[in-house]
Structures are given as C-alpha cells and as structure tokens.
Length: 120
Image (cartoon, rainbow, N blue to C red; front, top):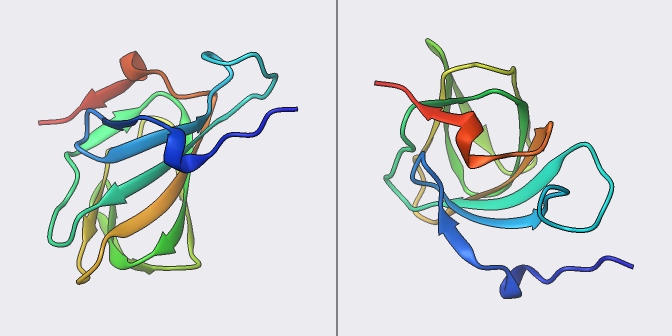
C-alpha cells in the first residue's frame, strides 16, 4: 500500500518559482502510474515564471484565486476549477488574492525537471 503525507513531503522551488511538494511520481517511487501529482502554492501577489512542459498538465485549484495564462489567453481562476494545459504550452499563474493560491498539478507523462523550460 502506498500512502504519503503532504506534511512529510519535502518542499522544493520548481523552475517556475512555484513551491511544490511531490506526492506521486513513478520515476522516484516503486509505483506504477502514468502521471505525477504535486501540491503547489503561489504566495499572494506573485506570478510564476513563464514556462513550458513537454507533458500535458492539469491544475485543480484547492484554495485562493488568480489568473491563469496560457500563451496569450488569460482567465480568472478560483477554488474548485480544473485547468487543462496542453503539452508545450507557455504557461504561468498569478495569485490575485490575499491568501496562498493552492492547487494540485497532475502531469502526464510524469514530471521531470529537465522537461520544464523557462520562457524569456
């Protein structure tokens, strides 16, 4: 049985400047799945660096509010919403609220640091 506690996961700062805690990654654990799952936070007033992933990605907003940017599109986002990000898309998310913007990141195939590229 595989069970992981969010509070025991090491927080890292991803290349896009998001605070991440990896919950599931078959490249790092003895599990079989085609995706990775991470818990992410963006502080109030902050925006992540523009970046792209080789993989498709889905954000599920748990708390807070913000603006999601995919290429030139911008939409308001808030708790309870799901955002699909196609592979290779230039993306970033901004926290427009007073509290942390908290969301889950599902990446398929699983996230690898070398698959994330910052965009100037």
